[in-house]
Length: 130
Image (tube, rainbow, N blue to C red):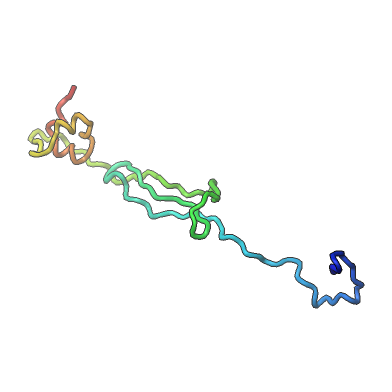
């Protein structure tokens, strides 16, 4: 076939050379694929026991951050990290609060379960509070 004066004209088979036939399909410019990228995991939020670690998860198309990635295959961005068990030490009757540590405030804002304050304010944190 050919277009002559804006009209389609069918050519006879002898006029059509098979070796000169154009390809029926050709590739064209395609956009880069959507792809999930992750940063490395953060440190665990706890030094013992169960904590959480996180990482950024972003969808890219080429160099651009976009929203086209498949959510069903999105990598997780947050997970628990279970480190060695926290030490459980028998109560030490001789423990004293460390000078310069505001143990009254630590008790008031419930910091006695934090490893630092449980040691620095061992006497205050052990006493019953109201």
